[in-house]
Structures are given as C-alpha cells and as structure tokens.
Length: 326
Ligand code: NDP
Image (cartoon, rainbow, N blue to C red; front, side, top):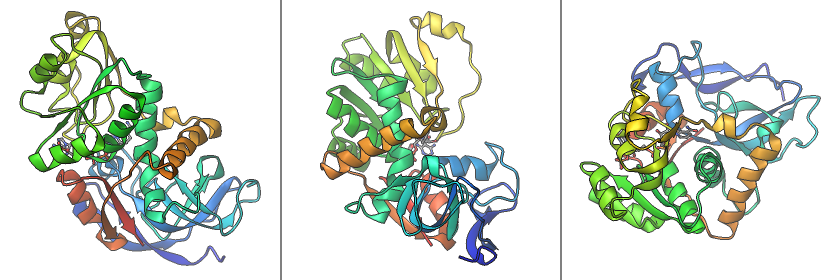
C-alpha cells in the first residue's frame, strides 16, 4: 500500500482528562524491517493509556495511544519471515493502535485462529497475558493456595479468576457493588467481598491464617489493607493503580506483618521474547477454543469516542473489556 496516505487517529497533544483524546489525522506509518503494518479491526482500551493520557506515566507529546489490537496485515518489513499480507494477527505490543493502522514487531504478533472473532482477539492479549503471568509466573499458584484478587468483576479480574479456578485454588475477590458481586461469582470466585472490611473478612475466611498471595490492582485505596491479608511469608503483587498509585512506604512494615514479599510486575517483563509471548497467547487461545475461558466484551466505542471509553474505564463501570472500532 501507499504509506504516504493519511489515516484517522486519536491524538493526545497535552496531558489531562479524557477530553484531551481528540480525533485527528496522521500519516500511515511505514513498517520497519522487522515490523508489520496492520489495518485495525478492533483496539483494546487499557488502563495504561489512561495513565499515559493523564501524565502519570510520561510519554513524549504529541502521541497516538494504544498497544493492543487485532487487524489484518497490510504490508511487511523486508526482514519479516513469519507473516504475509492478509494474515489476521493480534498483539499487546504495538504502537498507535488508536488509529486505522498500526505497526508491531513481528516477534510480538500472534496469528489468530479462524474460530476467534476480531473482538475477542483484540480483547484477549493484554488482560489475558497479564492474568496468565500473574498466576503462573509472578507467583505460581497451586491447588493448595488461597488467593485474594481485587476487582474481580473487571477485565483482568474476570480472566484471572477463571485461570485460578482452573488451577484449583481458593479465590477471594473484591468488588464495589452488588451487581459486580454476581459477575465475580459467575467467573467462579469462592468468596466475593466489598472493599470496606476486606482485610478482616479475608482473615475470617482463612481462619486467621491469611492468604498465600494477594493481587492488588486497585492500589492507593487498598494496598495497606492488602498487606494485612497475607499469611507469614506471603506475597503481595501490586500490579496497578486504578484508584491511584501507592505512595512510597516503609519496608520495615514487611517485617512487622510477617516477613512478607512484595513485587510490582509489568507485562513487558513477562513477555520478554517470542517463545514466552507465544506460550502465553497460545495457552489463552487454546482455553477459549476449548470453552474453558470466557472473555466478556463489555462496551465497544467508535474510535472517535475514545474519550468516552476512558471515562467509562476510569468511572469504574467496566464489567469486562472495552474496545474501540475504527
Ligand atoms: P478493570 O476492568 O478491572 O477496571 C478496574 C477496576 O478497578 C474497576 O472496574 C473497579 O472495580 C476497580 N476500582 C477500584 N477502585 C477504583 C477507582 N477508584 N477507580 C476506578 N476503578 C477502581 O480494568 P483492567 O482489567 O483493564 O485493569 C485492571 C488493573 O490491572 C488496572 O489497575 C491496570 O492498570 C492493571 N494492569 C496491570 C498490568 C501489568 O502488567 N502490571 C497489565 C494490565 C492491567 P470495582 O468497581 O469492582 O472496584
């Protein structure tokens, strides 16, 4: 294709609230030697883009957000070996997916099985691989483990609960409202709590022992209490800050609360190379095809309404995945 043509995109020219996500035009980027140029079918909306848009994570301005999408390969760089024009791929490692075209290194593109829709293929990589690495690699959960996982009705939460239950672990989760309680129970959670008193209630459920691992993506409003839910030598995994980032804290607390472990992981460090990326993606595809994993598409917004999509995510309305369609 002629990559000198322009495309519709969403552009951020200054950081701020969702209104800074503005429809705009930009050149179609040419693929690098090891890259694919992909025509977008569906884009995944993720919290990381809200952190970048708001200036919590620094990104050079102006920028077109987005790392996750499914689409059709339109052109390939001259060193690309595994993909051809017309292939349908998905990824969580692209750039500028809030647009009609994006580029991605072929190393981090996965061919999508025919039976999987564009929407599911766009919804799966980021939240699915996050749930996968958290439960398989950051802390390798086994059937004897009891786990606390916050925000169980959300995107990562819903997939993580299903993966944890397939391992056989006992899952305690938190949600903010009654309707989300039903959603988390449908995902398979054993105990669903509201946030008010979750630390005490978790200790009651575990007969005072505490959980083996606690996954916290809510952050600022929960993290102190999350540490109190852990057993001696338990592990806290802080993997997001939906309520705000956790401020610096005194490491001596880890001693006082029982020689605890704390880690703050991110997906890029758990998809270091093509084998690791494909291990996670193919396991997720296999589970979907075997009907052992359900991915819920909650809302689809047109690309021009990216600001509404961010408001929806930050307003804690999500009950699954939010997508943009060009
Ligand atoms: P969700 O669909 O889970 O949405 C976030 C949920 O957090 C909300 O639905 C809400 O559920 C809960 N929440 C609690 N307090 C707040 C608040 N003050 N504002 C907004 N939401 C709040 O989103 P995702 O599944 O996309 O992401 C979940 C988390 O995982 C995010 O923090 C994200 O940054 C993180 N993440 C981390 C990755 C990593 O590798 N480290 C990769 C991917 C995601 P409720 O109303 O029930 O409380």
